[in-house]
Image 1: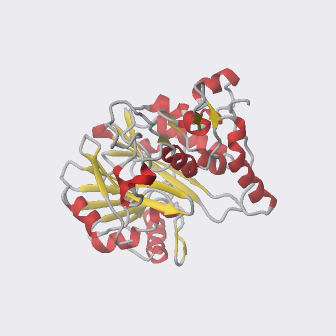
Image 2: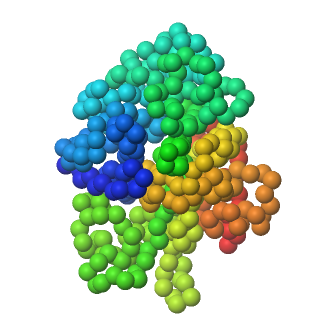
Image 3: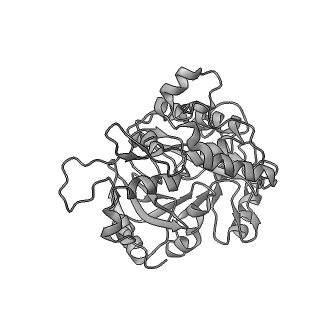
Length: 382
């Protein structure tokens, strides 16, 4: 872990991404910490990664780390949190609800709790997670937007010090039969009009041969991949499409294009557009469609944003509330086939086979909550 490379990219508007590579089995993917500099010069660090010497040096060059956020309970995004906080023990620490640690589940905070109730849950979270926790981002239990709830008189320990410059919406789903809660938080940094999410949506850049010489990589691959793969592998024109498909769990199916060249239809369907990752459509949206749909509506109603930064693939993405909502069109029961076709990536129905088989295995063996919604809605007929 100490030898993994870190690359830093400027995202503009006083924001940066620190990127590392994760690899398991046949899946290789980039993963990022998103960093925003606040007005006082302190850094708001969302989703810390492994704090290698290189990573910390690149981060420290930007300013002092004053706020740390764990925005989801997905393992790949929370694994380095304890080690990171050892390097930055003075930072204010807030986590998404439903986290689980070495000593159990940390619980949730809801916006109808009083100060003592919040203290009790947060105190337990610190013991559960194995590191200091200053707060748990609250779930909204009342009508109205959570951004409005941030402005109501509430216990001071319910909201972070940065609540005035970020609007926040929290998704937390805890279904019977699942191993535990699933959570993700969305943040709109109001001064920069930036929506910060982790896994909610992605934009996969397409291969582009234009303007490159023979020695250059002929696809939009991040430099981080060269820290893990040699040039022979990276020069293979199928490397990037295969990497994308394996990361999102679509099959490596090829078919000839008009010139007879083999292409990957699943890859072609996903590129250069804002999409909901297929694996999340299959696992999250298929089991909790109402919760995800309502969260998307609330996120789209937050402070105005005109771009999105995420933890995977391309960032920043030029997209606002309309395109964010459109990425979840499969959850809109009022759309007809033509409307779904114009809103969703044209993934062929047969290319959902891997994820469909995984869901069948989960259901048949009672390994999780049952599928209650057709996550393949809008798929392209063969």
